[in-house]
Image (tube, rainbow, N blue to C red):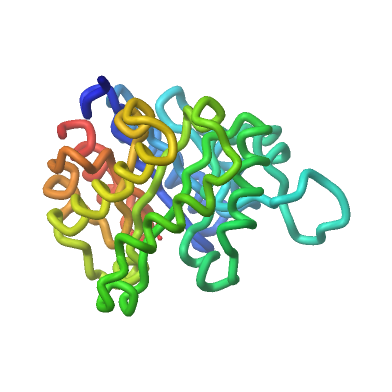
Length: 256
Ligand code: PGA
């Protein structure tokens, strides 16, 4: 059976709708230098229009991913970007179901399952985000939300097809708020997610799938979070925009 040691730590930098073209190129360069030689899978997710600038400095140690992809393959979908376009532009990964899309844009599990299909067809690694809102947590529904989002978004996909899947547990109340889940709360949520993957597929699949934490990860709290057996790295927003902070987070993942 796989153990945590067989799961390469993963650190993603979600740049969201930030930076300028020059700033994106500079941050990608600094992040590539920070990732160099580390036993960490490090991926930045720039705004679509800056993918090429991040790709231009891509090193063996820094991958580039899209922040979203369309559920459609091609055609009359103004403003959308397909998974195969991302792949064609040098992306290796794509975020699916970030809470700013689930809650801000009303994306539901059925739509996300179709996006995962397009990502897998294009040969991209899907990084599927799940997580409860504050009121769901306060009502004691966090585990049920994690389970139902995983079941709903992964429906129709086989264990083999999902071999590359990364799951990001991102409690909505912790994203961009400076309020981080405690390591023990995050560990419990990750254990729920892993148990769900085991129930949906197999124990082996659950053990080898990386589950990363997102929500106000920073240079000070990363090491404590990543020390948990259940936490295989992080998806980082704000702190990924500060090169020195993101470098410290990559280092914390490498040392776990
Ligand atoms: P944050 O964002 O680190 O700024 O909280 C995390 C995310 O949205 O992925």
